[in-house]
Image 1: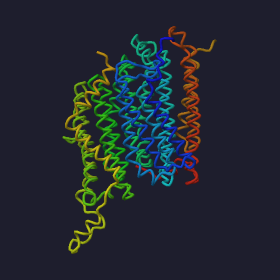
Image 2: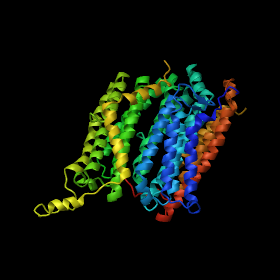
Image 3: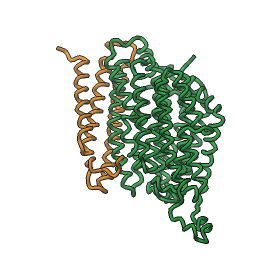
Image 4: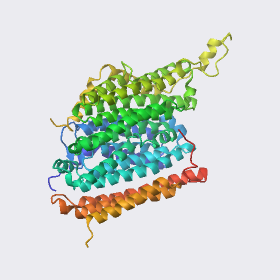
Length: 497
Length: 108
């Protein structure tokens, strides 16, 4: 045991995040004694996120690990930076929303930070227990965060449903882990891989059962059909910034674990689990996209659209290879940027109008052309329109899956992408085709002035976040090479040549 | 007849089955939570059994890992009960029920 690397400096970003959560909680609790206003809380959280993201960049390497529990390699760095950046954007973009809607602001920001912390541990874990603790840290913070919009009865209801279903899913996942532990005799990824490579005839049944339960549990965390029942309810009931976090950080973290665990230790038994993931990918993309068509609440629409995206991403797990893994990371990056842009714009919209109904978006192109542009660009990018991030990343992802021999899955994915364009366009139609509600008569002499009065502006913070994300969407859409290079270097750790 | 690994696994499988049946069929939030606790205890039993008997099929593994896992699962289960009960109280204050069929503000 003496050859383990106990260099605590490898965990600096995690220490910063944990410290930030603690400081935010204490600053809120003692704000009268400290004579500070609540507006310092998002500042602390944002600085912590920035510091965690910046220090993560110190660890660009192939092989470091902490005590064989947590890998600190390029793969971890990729996700650490991605999660810290997401946290920063969410904190910045939701400041106005939180100060108006959330009573327990310290707890709220602390939960967002702890979600990020759990997600980084999940992406970095090299051992089952560490991965499990990461999952639970992420989930528990999410349960609490979902139910924090106390004046809205849907919030508590969503939290209760989420925690009960999440508990069942965690228990199933855990039973799967225990069976894999029993089949392989170890909780370390490396040792599980070595043991399974030696042959699995004598442990075939428990291993297969373990795989089924593991995929079910992880499928729940990533909200794959048929384990998606909690997603629309939790997304609708949760405060908007938490919905943004759920659809980005929590999903990406589940896929990070999927990649690390299935491309390494479980690769020797790939024939046992490949077909399960393929079936789930198929179900997820079909069901998610078809149910999204009939939604009338923007959060539920985005919930089902994110389920559809999970189906596309699962294709990359099915065709496990270095090309598809790097395509998955690239698509994840593009999806995170795009989804955040849409959510930040919807938060700005909700701050002004207080509605989440899609019909409430009517005439937005008239009353706030900038916001309408951001939402349109985001939705088009989600559906995969050229020149935007979604096109490039989806193209590379589909190509990698087709090269991996799953052409039939890719062709269904293309059809489902077209379906998704339909429901995204429904929102765009509301904004651009219809006139704003409360429109003056056309023959009125002062029609021009009254149209002026309907105009409104978003707050400066929202301008900064949505503007930066909009630029990022276009940048990745035109020039994806930097992100692709980062993804390639990250997955090189998983697939040593 | 001595008690072997298979016996432990059978018991834990049965307990897990009961737990999941309770969790999925009961309509009361607290009863669902009890089902989840049963499932977690079945997991603990599996881990302990594998840990105890793992030396039998692999000499170089550290059997202690299963025991450590159980300690963490117990802790997480306690935290989970705390969070879930707090949510139940939150919902009960507003709706005066924790019946999952009647907690239905949101439907697809």
